[in-house]
Image (cartoon, rainbow, N blue to C red; front, side):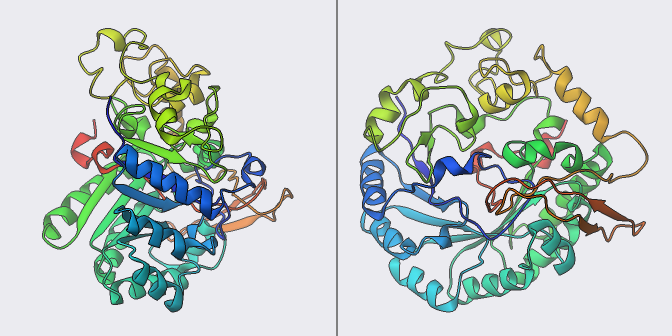
Length: 408
């Protein structure tokens, strides 16, 4: 059995942003009883014994945890490489210095766009200026810097300007990841899924930038699953390389697996080793024996492992089905129809209803989204509010990312 080398620690689901493509759970009230510092320290100790080498600290917004510095120091003592995935709101000079002293190794900061007005509207709060200031602070303190950008219909046409901004800020790496349609993003899919023309244009821009910046900045580009011929090898295989621990101690094979109707596994009841090695949750889709046709006889069965179990459940209601993204899936039509809808009409961006992650269960006022595109059109998006806050930072192991060369 493989041992995990990476763990995503979702420390809290509290967050100052309201991004409409957030992949965290919709039932946030179930996660209010967060792990204590002592519980997290035990989890980190067990993770290191299990083989984990990389610790990704995320949420929500991990900076909302007042004990973050202490947690980083504990991870450092265990020999874990620590990576902070953050909106950067709350990364003051004093907090940054404390994290540096505690031994934090790497920082990933999310940005929503290359200019303040659009960035703040996507984030749902004034944040662009503070993000840029935090990026400069990270560079001053000598941390390796990754910028995370979630792409969608409303910012993908500005990908060239986003790359220019990353270059100007001195980013070592940028992840341009098209929206993954889970959680809040699922509710907003019709308004977020880009058109084929937008993707073709973005791919050309990325190719040119990669050639120009080859020795200066690493560019990771992830196309939307819906436009792929084959599904992504989610997390490098179910229960093969990575695991996620949620704020209340639930352990998952991937960040979206909370949506599946499978037995719960929590560090408050079992050791991390038992969960990884023996729990029904981690055993359910591990390997290839569970696979249906056509996956069972496909030569790619140990390449993409049948695709994403959460996406299969999202689109078909059955987590054991072949990921409908695959062109060989008997359910592929559900994806094809979504793509057809995204490409209908002449407009590159169509208005839609966006459900943001908000802090109350009330209806939010209509939010004006100004798109500085070629036609200078203005769209009004009516937001149906749900509950609580979330940072939309993107996380994925590098070896699961697709490059523009993989676009069918």
